[in-house]
Length: 277
Image (tube, rainbow, N blue to C red; front, side, top):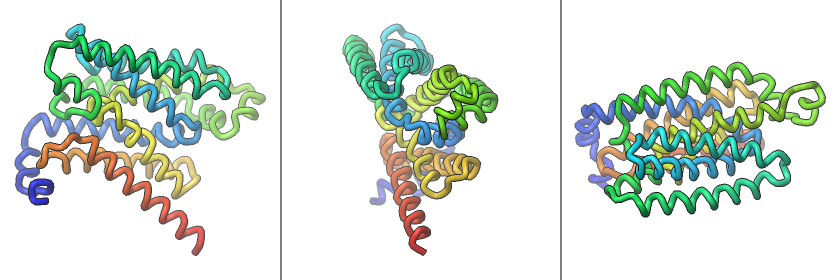
């Protein structure tokens, strides 16, 4: 237990530059995940996030094999995946099956690329569970630019997107371009998901993109309040997860998922208590 929660060692490790870079990147990622999360939950896109994150691994693995930055490879893989899913899954009835088909194919390629990569095994493992030592100034710049673009586009399409998320049939009848909004939002989610792969890993990026928002939506139905709570929960999970992982050297994703889960359970208990009060 002392090794797991060594306060002095945590303070010591926090002095390193790469740790501060990781915390900055995580704060930006928490903001993105918190803002996008409630829309992901309301549009039932959790499985899409999972599929996109797994295909970001394929892009990252290809980047490792080609000697390109992993972040750029993951970003390219997730954007391509989002576009493919958006184009193929036009009807809601076939959405899950399309994701399953594309996900299986992408994972197969990812496994092949990782097998072909001759470098260190830690680089392969980092794609799956996150690796904060890989976050540098260039990663922060890429993350910042992508965050500004994603939030800017989201601000432009937010009102019609929210309308289409709440009542897609009425929105379509009112002339809202739902057919265009869906792939655009999918790409925004893909970008944010790819950025999360480097910090928390592809396997558990759902803990950041979906769980905080799901907890917030249990507490309030107000879109603005849900977004604010989602951002707060995401920041607590990702920043708290990094800080707690420093002393024992455990992968960040283990603590991020644990904190997110605790927040979600607490939100469910709170909502049930309030309903019975």
